[in-house]
Length: 68
Image (cartoon, rainbow, N blue to C red; front, side, top):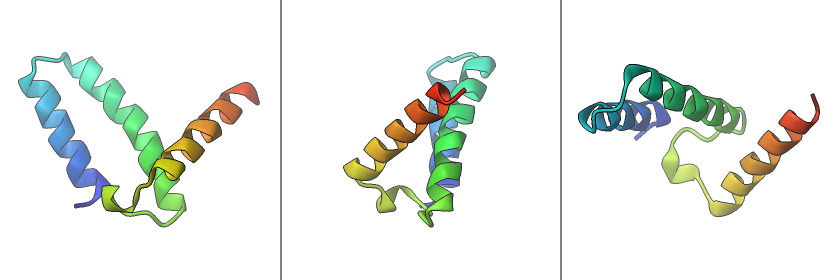
């Protein structure tokens, strides 16, 4: 599955759990930033993820925020 397919399933899950539309939108936006970053690296779906890659993204986000 692609990230987009997983994101749609996750959004549907949140809706079934009774989350507000703004909450779903906010979470989707945050995950979308991760998906865009992963796409830049050529990763097309969750099967391409590793713990090290997620740690790299975490560092990337911290550095991006601290660079402001």
